[in-house]
Amino acid sequence: MKATAAEPEPPPKGRPVVTLMHHRFAGPAGAPVVLLSNSLGTSFEMWDEQLPALSQRFRVLRYDHRGHGKSPTPDGSWSIETLGTDVLALLDHYDLARVNVVGLSLGAMVGMWLASHHGERVDRLVLCCTAPWLPSEEFLSRAAQVRAAGTASLTQAILERWFTPGLRATRPEILQRFAGMLAATSDEGYAKCCEAIAEMDLRPDLARIKAPTLLVFGAGDPGTTPAIGESLRAAIGDAGLVVIPRAAHLANVEQSEAVTNALMTHLCGDLMERGLAARRSVLGPEYVERAFASATELTRPFQEILTRFAWGEVWSRPAMPVETRRLITIAVLAGAGRRDELELHIRAALAGGLDPELLRETLLQTAVYAGIPAANTAFAIAQRVMSELELASS
Image (cartoon, rainbow, N blue to C red; front, side, top):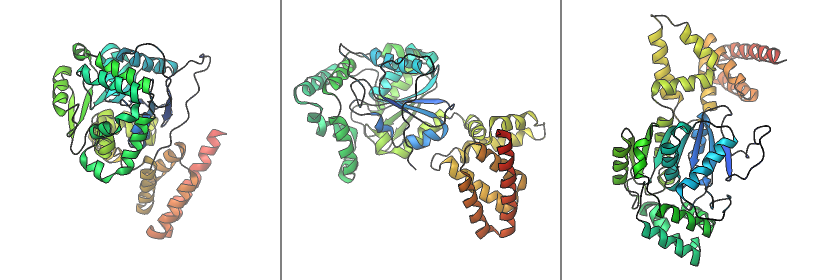
């Protein structure tokens, strides 16, 4: 199920319109925000495979670096600080005081700068396929080449760095898509970002990163190798490291499921944190708070086990959309005759925006495979809940 990127949100009321980097929001309003920062020579579309899972739990903000995608290419020299300041302007524009930051390559360099210089703005941090310092000669050479011959002149060399031989031999559609993304990047924008990387040295700042950090590296990345990931882990001090097999530099594209699972696990926290977030999202925060407030010495362990395993493990798995899990749960509860739990889930689903037509079709399916009496009871509960919700909203 592919998420559809929303149009840019309007600025907060009374806020003047300013020039911002090109961006899109997706996911539920009011959810914690995850900022996705793209690599050198790509646009925010490089995160398309991660968007469906992330946007189930988070408000996802993707943007293009200056000189990339549909963002402008301002005059003057640029640095990693310049690119980080663009992000701060975007966050300030939407009054986003604190966000999760996920970056790959150049995007992760910006993430390191944000977390070390503006740590109060970063909740959790994911750094993918990156380095705090790289030899300058290669990037100065690239800058000169694209100014002379355009970004398309780099295509063969860059695709060999981005993807393993296995993918290059079997997935021509991915090569075509990303070659097009590279060729569409502003020549001057690419060159200036190369120069920003050439002068970058974030190594002295790494110890200042306090956000819980995950490092994700491709096992076959020829440039930002897993060995760099090990050195980053040692410098940051308490970071997790995941090395993705059969992946090169754009690991999130080549092994999208493995990278998505790593992101979700880190961003959602441990099982209890993740379970609480999922349970509140599905059933409503008021219900969950009441359940814990009313727990006794006898029942509290059950509430904790339920939250950790049913919600932190199963409900939080990214492969299935939450709406699908809601409908399956309603069908199973209806068929099993669990009336109290059925009413709870129907009420929460409808209050959360579930299309009543999908509820009707689910209960019709239940009638076929679990029996008419079970479905009859479920339809009665659903009708009563819908009437109560309509009355409450009138």
